[in-house]
Length: 104
Image (tube, rainbow, N blue to C red):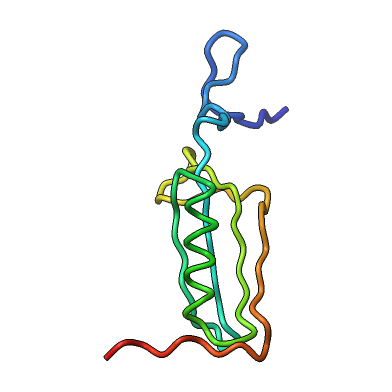
């Protein structure tokens, strides 16, 4: 009979990374235009994430879109990474909007 290793245990309780709590929440924002170019970032404040998304969309060409989502650090990952959660907001620029010209 073979036994599957379910990870380290103490007594009968499995030990591993604790599940994320609301205090661990971070907010990811991503904005892309139709050709795949865009911007993204992480912050610890949802209002700041939404503002940064809106600012990014203002610099991209018409038809650009983006979203803000809740993320948590993946404590079990060997490399830094995030566990993606609920999408809080989606935004899209009108296809005919023109991005403001860059200052020279």
